[in-house]
Length: 122
Image (cartoon, rainbow, N blue to C red):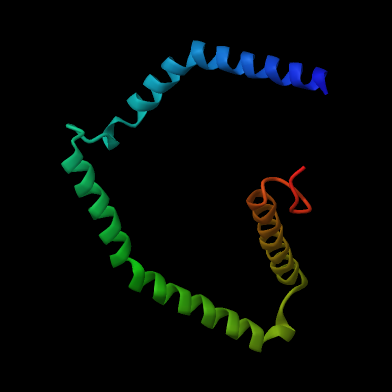
């Protein structure tokens, strides 16, 4: 147990040294590459305005997403009606998609419990 703790401490030290050495240059490079998205001057009022723009833009996109949802649902209904014509490849893809959704659900449950499998903290 103590050796694992020392290994973890050593790796954390190496990571912090790497960040200290390369973090500033990465930060500057990231800002330079994305300077078209930076709002000048960065005031509280401008941040509030951008926040409201994002909120109301997303709110305005609900009807289009609603229509897209119903089109997708109609496509699934049509596929279900003609299920005898479904290819094995399509059924396999659908099964893999369902399995992936279930796996993400399980992973979320494990993370939500604090990375424990039983739900009990030791």
